[in-house]
Length: 294
Image 1 (cartoon, helix red, strand yellow):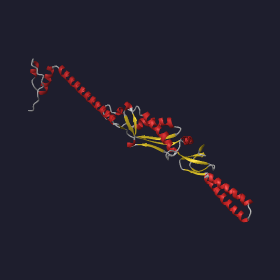
Image 2 (cartoon, rainbow, N blue to C red):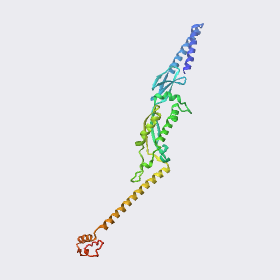
Image 3 (tube, one colour):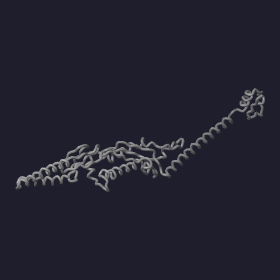
Image 4 (spheres, one colour):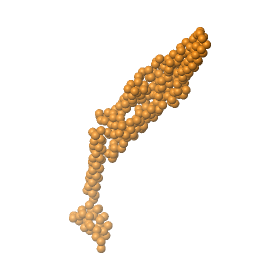
């Protein structure tokens, strides 16, 4: 548009010269008319070329001849030099959303596989907008910001997810007393770790606003390993119970064997109201008499 304005200005200048030096009143009137129209349109075009409206929450990248000048603008009506343009860089909130079935598959402890549902809210740092704008080009109809997101931000998020979950062991969530395997709360353990990892890798380029995890899913071998581990815990618990019961029975047997049989016979006779004479002989019975109802 700026070039078109320059052309109109040249036309206006030529018309002005013709109006001043031309011969004939009619010719000069026409030249003055051409000058007035061309000058007005040229000024309008140049002024229009100097005005750009930047959408809310976006950063304006000021360029001259398709190269960044290093200047940025905020949102709203912005003025530039006529030969400058403003390209937009999205500084609004972005979402890396991989929830439900769209979760992120990562390799965890013991080379097992887990699918982690995660949502990350982030926004681009305005200070790095000119540098990132210059580093990426439009590809297949995608804006520079979209290319930046696909080639820079998303790969770093995926890499950070792989890194922090490399030591995650779902067997550690199995209850050692019951064998139950409740879904682990990843937000307690991994939320801050992911924010820290992303800040380390992208802190000067994006701001991480929030991270939220849902319960993970596992591949079939990992699911089977969790179930088998829980079954082993149950079996071990049952063996401990059987061991404790056997120990108790042995203690009872040893206690009965250590009791004085005559004293025991006398206690039974007293309880039943019988004569204790038989307890004094050699034929003391070790069998407790059966109580009868008269």
